Image 1 (tube, rainbow, N blue to C red):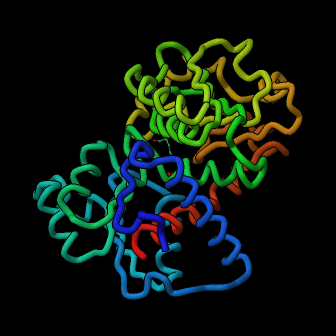
Image 2: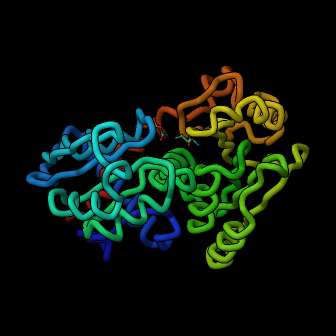
Image 3: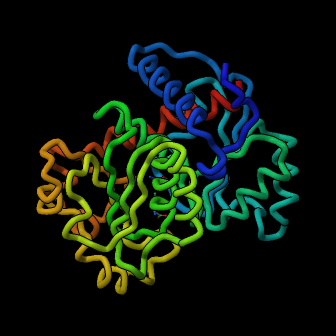
Amino acid sequence: MAKNFRGRSLLTLLDLKAEDVRYLLDLAHMLKAERLAGQFQQRFRGRTLAMLFEKRSTRTRCAFETAFGEEGGCPVFLSSSDIQLGAKESIEDTARVLGRMFDCIMFRGFEQATVDKLAEYSGVPVFNGLTDLYHPTQVLADLMTIEESLGDVAGLDFVYAGDGRNNMANSLMIGSALMGMNCTVLAPEELHPEGKLVETVRGLAERSGAEIRITSDLETAVEGANVIYTDVWASMGEEEQMKERIALLEPYRVDAEMLEQTGNPDVLFMHCLPAVKGNEVTFDVIEGPSSVVWDEAENRKHTIKALMVASLL
Ligand code: CP
Ligand code: NVA
């Protein structure tokens, strides 16, 4: 079924080519239509998914668990307080044991090296459900949501405002560059993305025709934008930095004035959620007519199902 996707992991979007993303998005649109038509298959019957969590989750956990379970598979939730991962047993040994018992593994946690090691040692497909560095499955849902609202993402102007060096900013830059969507990261200089990643992303963008812009200029950054995206100002594990982040990021809050500055009455507002209303986005924007955050949350499930169908079948 999948175009060379069988058996593959998703650790970062840097693992994918534009044609892989296109394939996964087409599959996700198809699976969503199928589900809305009330057609259920049993694609994962007899299969098992280990779900490893070092950090909390609502959407990612529920998306993986329901997508796998409703297709007849058996998802097993394992938090780091339940299992030995990195505590009394090395990641390598845990990975080899899980690889003998499960058909695939998803991981949410701190270090990217952990999810990379799980893939290296388990011998089964591993899906990154968020690390400090990347959140690739979220961006699949984001691209799907933009396509539903605006059609082809190539050539659109996408602006990410806020903490420009977190997992969302990193993955959104890569996804945009792959798919030919212009991406502006609007952030204070202290929170600009890492130079090496920007260089890599610009290399990808050369092939797709996307423009990748990193700026702190609040006056011009959002002009003509089709999408404005933001995320929390302190990610999981950084909570103690919240005070200093508020001081740095207050001017970058997405509010009605910022949407107006785009000059585009049809601009979309997006957020991966959970949101801190009043910090990175005002209540009226996230609850207003530009916001597509609930579609975006729902699409986590369809895109994650597509990823597992493509990798396992
Ligand atoms: N967007 C997202 O990953 O949400 P959760 O943290 O609830 O999984
Ligand atoms: N940047 C956020 C994303 C949550 C989905 C975090 O890592 O907490």
